[in-house]
Length: 570
Image 1 (cartoon, rainbow, N blue to C red):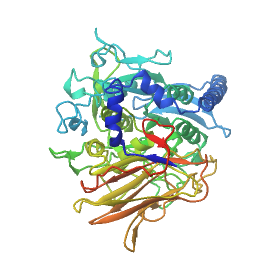
Image 2: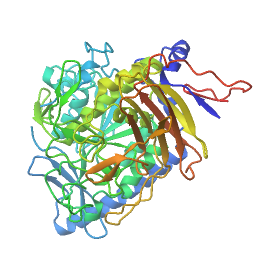
Image 3: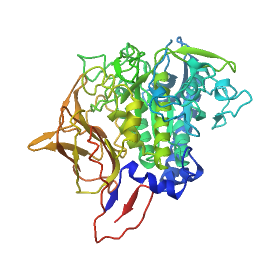
Image 4: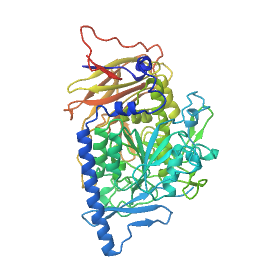
């Protein structure tokens, strides 16, 4: 069996082994991240994705030239659209930037230097990867380009600058030469790519240890076939295949800006046509899809007072009623860098701005874990932590507008800091027929929250309209019990309704126990068989008594082997 410890339990060991891991993503760490990747599979996927994209784009360009169709278009809102492929039914599939027009708020200020948590997290030597409709200007003063270190670099050989890409990059990395433009991770690095051949390039980058990427674009929803809306199409599946084969990599995606449009001619619920607007990679299982909110009303301690969704933010869910979007960031009137000079700035709005707001914030959480333990979190851990600690917004519980709520990086960072004391973050593996049980003591003050998060194998894609077949492959379950009472996880029951029950759709499940008191038993199990022979997952628990901190003791009469940074075979 494999015995795991929570992230905080490995701190001392790692620090004694080497201090070279701390404060940056080193070559050694990239090697560690990828050491258990199946490179044969990743190389196969990269070749497959690259070949398919090349054929599709060549056919699309030839088709467009023959008919006088523009392959690259400046839209009425100032955004960019570029032809990618043609569907068999003749539909033209364009990528488009997801901005609409004009302020910003975030709680990463509590993590940054001078913040209330005293963590001084600035993204030092951490790297985000950005695919977009063009590139940022590397010499911009906010990227330390004017005689500085040029923290922005071009990774794919492209050369076309675009204001949208510059704004996204600045939201992640701007150093704060102009204070209002300071990014979430102001000392971080960004590698920029144009969006052509994004999947193949991301596969190669993931194989080199990429942790997180930002994609503030999606399909032109006025041109896609109606079945695309909410559907788990081939594109959705391919990104999931990449995630499963590179389990430390997390793709962050803008949900889209169709909140007040109705291009879907066949909505999942005809009586609620304002839902079911996600397309393409926004319907994948393993990535993080971001909705946009207006400036949140936050008190001085970082607590949410109120927040409203941006009217343009696209609503989910997926056709099989998965909770999408996953989470909400701030994308309303974000002030950041532009591309037309080394000192150019502007304010724009869109889920395109909310997505890098989240990307930069999550980069700091990886930095925090690394500073404590010398390791990085699996993507399922990072995603699960973001969803577990989000501030509920809109309807009580998860919904298809806010997802699990507004990102709260302060609370997430506190959970990391208190791991092993008032919280538990354990990266585990479930074997076929196995269940995992642990007893915890609630603190009697806060709600007890227990969640599991995992990177699920790619499911079966569909070209059917409104197919409700669950796309989940490995169906894990979490239950929290006390006496004769068993608490069940959240799930969607309709496009505009949720409840508690057996969740058979999402690769993230959370159980909330209000007014918790005493000892509870957490059980993780699975249904049916496990594709791949086992399933890695992360258990996250908050609201624990600080006395519930004893380190686990190893079973006796066993020998240890295959010792890694986070696990040991017994």
